[in-house]
Image (cartoon, rainbow, N blue to C red; front, side, top):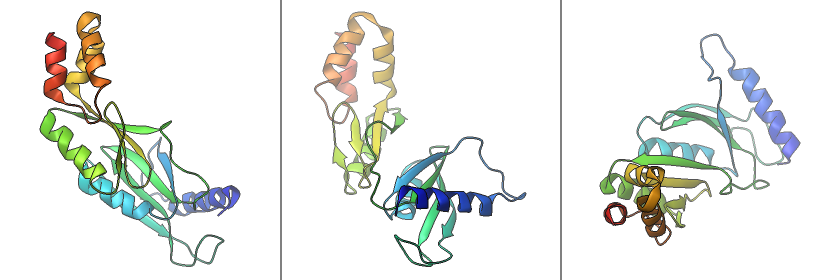
Length: 180
């Protein structure tokens, strides 16, 4: 599907869904997927608290990248952030220029989110970053890391140096580095 056609479909969807009985979020993140927006939304809703899948809009007819009945747009929230997933075809890919940052309280929560993303066809990156199987980037960031880096001085430097050696963040190692 071409860019112009995808935008046209998005505008059509927006006009169809602007009803008085539905409150639209003032700001919504639009995420472009090849064809798996609904699968991604359901994965996020099952993985992160304060996440849900809303309306699913299907194509009313044939179009260049699909057929009548295919999912065009999915409304969902990820950790309270309103999003829409647009099945726009393979023309545009996700990149690290956009990521969700998920703050975690401890190693158990860090492991749970990291393992859910990486273990479901995703891939590890560095410094607490990973990608899900749809190519969307995530930063799984323990609060202890954020606190250490914002503290400044030697403890920030030690925590930063420790983080630079990690893929998934090791909370105990960050705490040890922070203490010196």
